[in-house]
Length: 119
Length: 110
Image 1 (cartoon, chains in turn orange, brown):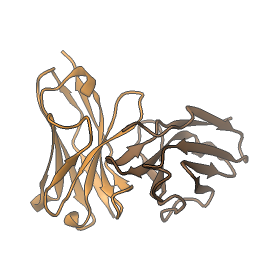
Image 2 (cartoon, one colour; image 1 turned 135 degrees about the horizontal axis):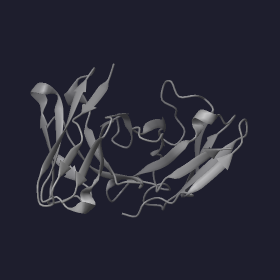
Image 3 (cartoon, rainbow over the protein chains, first blue to last red; image 1 turned 180 degrees about the vertical axis):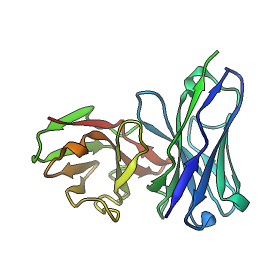
Image 4 (tube, rainbow over the protein chains, first blue to last red; image 1 turned 90 degrees about the vertical axis):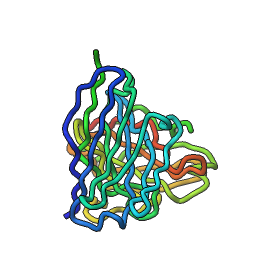
């Protein structure tokens, strides 16, 4: 069965970096694009962008350029989200989510990774 | 890209039907048949309930249905059950940034 398993919660200080992993299983990793979605505490979902798992080419949504980097390691079917120069407002749950087919909706989601930024 | 507009909350009694609206523009909801709906229980990941306006993924109850008219999409839940109590989010393809979500609607089953 399809599963996306994310790395555990992180507590970071402002200015630090964090790397969240999303390990896929149960399907051919390179056949479906991967998306990243942010949910701040008590807030709604925010699409951060996606990465083409065939080419490794990332696309970032407005507001997620510069400090956010999507990457892959196809040898272990894993997608990564790295955030640098962390700020308190980056505190959120970050989800990876697989494209269903057309890139307009997401059929499988990771369990989420809470990143807390606090001094 | 502004979020799609959803009511903050809706409520209904068990057995009743409720509808959640999702309003966008001609650049997103109105321009494409790529509206999706997600259900999110507290502390859980979102779950895809409807895609391409009105299609249900395998395993989703047929009590959930979707539709669209102009720039507004709707999710209807019939025969409301206690387990339907959750947050619901719409999303749409958008010409400017590929995907945009709605602000979310909290459904309370009375």
